[in-house]
Length: 483
Image: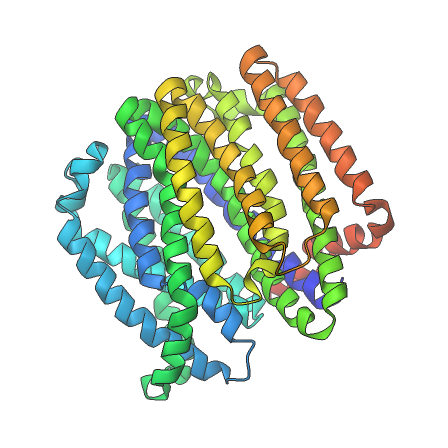
């Protein structure tokens, strides 16, 4: 693996661990200060924010990464993308303004919170979208130090403002205000630093048209992904109560920090593979296949460690009783990012050929399946059904991508077979956990799968990757970020 990729990946993962770890700890603390029902309301409001944010950013998070590696100059692509962003943000905010009173009719748990805090949420949608735009700009250019500094500052300021505002009695609105303040801080700093590259006069109709054509299906894809991700929480609001929704959402918030780590990895992985596919397609694909087993092994190893220390002492130390009695939800939800790791490794193969219409087709298909599956699972099995549905959809998504893209990009049969095996063995593991409540039995399956990932991926022949990878994360990279 190239030293630049290892270095960049190390920085992204180091920042990911720091950021996601701080958010993880933040929610552990907030869960003691805020009632589960308030966390339930937070989850529902975040669905609205993220949905309208997806409309604002309009798939540009993926489009920028792809178009920065064309013959067009980067600053031209940047200003074309920024022009699109401003236009789509105006449309998105106007749509939210029109629907804020209507949304609680369909999501009863929201009550009047959107209407009563309309301008707060309008500001959050815009700043949240622009912050993501800024991060992907630096990630696409492989400017990992700039990315790391902005991301770290965002997380630290968000945690600080959240703790202060919640402590002084602002409740869940304090967390939303913290989200606004932390994003706004980064935007101001970005404008000061990069003001020279911003020029709407550089934008061209042809450039905007090309990016829009690529990005539009990805915007629809992102919107559908958000609906899929939040659909279980919307249904739990309907079929249970805000306390049950809050407990499930708390665990899901923790699990989503893992997905955040995969996103951090993907910011280095995607542009690196794009550039290598131009030079040597065969070697690039071999690296993708090796990464599937590497990520599977690392995740399973971390999962096993979490179960061991959690069952011994950690969970009793940091969790309220209402969460301890539902710890099985946490374990089942954590199976989702395991399959997600495989998808992250393969993402470059899906996005390289500009087949964004296929990705949109997959999103529509998965949305239909998810809505149907989640509806019945929650109706009959409540929060446990929601967790199982989350895992099933992660596995199903991986196989649908395999099927749709198998004739476009060469996906190894070894990778497909491994994904199939892992999905089946983890489904059995989840079923046994629900039936027996045995965390020890669950742990045994996790350890066996980790050993198989190591053996099948021939990771013993890639020890230099392990040592160099972790040396960079814990050593020089951290020094570079600080300096």
